[in-house]
Structure formats: C-alpha cells, structure tokens
Length: 166
Length: 293
Image (tube, rainbow over the protein chains, first blue to last red):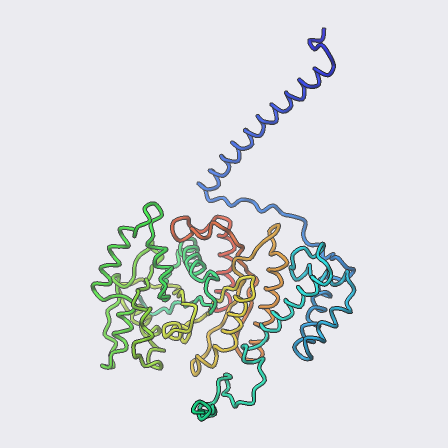
C-alpha cells in the first residue's frame, strides 16, 4: 500500500530526498578536495593541468593563424614604412570576419562580440605597440636635423646654447 | 674555491616589477635543491627586495633571528657588498677585502647569498671611476673563487636593479648570460627592447654576454599561454631576432616560459617554489645552461 495520499505528495518527497542526497554528496566532495589539497601540499605533488582541447588552428575566418598574423605584420609594416592612415585604410578594407579573427589572434578581449570600429581601433593600438617595440627609442620616431652620436644623443656642442640667452 | 670558474647569470630588465627577483631566487632554489649544484646569489638592487624577502619571517613579520643577527654583524664588520666596492675603489690600487661567510650568508648548504644594503641607494652619488668599477664584480668573484674556505660555486646568480647602475654595469661586463624576464604587456616588452638595442654600446669594449629572453608570468588558459600572451611572445621574439641581426649580439628568445601563479608571491618568504612551477623553472634553467655551455 502506498504511504502517500497523492501522487503529488510522492513526487515532492522524492524531490526533497534528491536535494538531501545532493547536499551530502557536496559535503563529501568538499571534504575529499580538502584532503587532496592537503596531501598535494604535504608531498609537493603538482595539481594536474586540466588539458583542454589543443588549439586546432581553426579561426573565426577561413584563414589560419599564421596567415592572420602575417596580415597583422603587413599592416604594421604599412604603419611604419608609409603612414598611419595607410595602415588604417588597409584595416578598413579588410573583411569583417577576417578583422574579427585577427583581433582574436592578437588577444583583444571580446573579439566575437565587439563592434567592427571598436575592433579596428583595438588592432590599431596593437599595431602602434608593435611598431614602437621595433624602434630603438621614442627618439627614433622623431624627425630631427640635429646631429646625433651613434646612440641617438645630441652631439655635444651641437645644441644652440645661445638660444637660452635670448 | 678552487680554480673552476662558475657560470654567471644576471637577471635584468629596465622595467620594474617583471619578476626579476622571484625568478632569480626560484632558479637558485630549484637548481641548488635538485641538482646539488652550489649556487651563490647576489642581491645588487638597492631596493633590497630579495634581501628583505629572505629576511622576512612569515610567522612574525620580523627579521628572521638567524639572518638578522648575521646581517647586523656583517654591516658592523664592514663586510657588505658596498664595503667591498668601497675597498675596491680606494685609490691605493690594491683590492684589500677579505671574502668569507661574513659577506656570504648560507641559506642552505648548497644555496648561498650576498645580500644588498641600503648604502647602494646612495652609491651613484659617490665619486667612483666608472671604468675602474666596471671590473669590480669580476675581481670580487676572483677573490671568492680563490678563497679556500669557500665552496666551489657552480653558478653565480645576480639580481640586478631595473636600471643601469654602476653595479649592473659591472655585472653585465663579466657575466656569461643575461637573463631577461618579460611579461605579456607593452611596457615590459619595451624594457627588453631598450636593453637589447643599447647594451652593446654600453658594454664595449668588453664582449657582450649572451642574452636569453623568456616570458615570465604568462597568463594561461588550459595550460597554454593566452592569445594576448602569445602576441607578446611573438613580438619580443621578433625584437630579439632583429636585435641579434642588426646589433650583432647573441640574443635568443627561449621556448621555456613561466606561467602566472598567485602562490609565487610567497615563494621567497616561506611558501617555496609552487609545486606546479618547479618543472617550468627546471626547463628554463636547462635551456639557459644549454645556451651558455
């Protein structure tokens, strides 16, 4: 004979027992994690790195990572060798999916969700960083007619000291 | 020490906070404890981060008794690295300075340490002959090497300040390897670029040591560097090969990298090298030594 008066009552009791069992399992799991942590620390056993799926080389566009990074290099070279506007134009002529894929490959956050103009600005920022890393110093970017030594410092005596007296 | 020359490795980056001190200590700890190699480590940074981290007792927050007492004695007896430099720079022309365990502190049987002192802060204000000081570390190591009461060190590590001080000048003029940790950000990468593109002309006429650059504190995802970390790895690798080609220097970007772990902050003050960083540091060491062998 069924102890429950209705089917509804039986289901509620079952659900409640399931909840209780889940709580017990959670407590057991927490206790086991604590013991594992203690043992690992005591015996210097590193926590195994959870291997995720290795990067497949598949990107947001049909192009591979290498192709996308080569495209990024091309834009940087335009920035350095031609002018910033040339790099900007090259980016604006790049298809959206490719732009998104480049943004993802250079580590811009939210490359999938951000708007295209935001992505383009982010990529240009990385282009500027990359070009600055390639120069010896900020002085290297300046156009100056002042004579310099091998390390870019002004040659002594070349500075117009008389200008200070004016 | 007998006649065998130790391999000398200096950790430097003109950007502060990239992990020079922690890397130096972790390498020394891993190597001395796992291979029985005898390691001597210098703290040449006036900020004394390494010295203070070693001295800091995690339990009480005070100077560890043993080190504290030793350190005070060392200062009183004028046996610090600054006193050594002072003795070396005297106009007498002779370097009259005894090296022993009042200059060198035993962290463990195989891991020894020359701490920094506050006087190094003011060192640049003293009138030292730059060209003369350039040879100071080489001469000091010679003294340590020829002292029969000191061990035969296999490796000497230097924690350098994030600037080109007289002492870093002296270290870089004589070491076998310059190890440059870089982080996954623009400023740390730029610090690397500055060193690579200007070190040679500062060190000449001494031959430039080999330079090894590696990614430190790389952010990871699933056990691999994140895309952003990979971007900077690629950028710094490019800077390295460009510098090697244009400056005629031996600069290499290492395959080894050290992942970012919060536990590393407590490594020196008592936590030890985090268990999951021991292998990355071993790999970094193996690559460094293979490069200078």
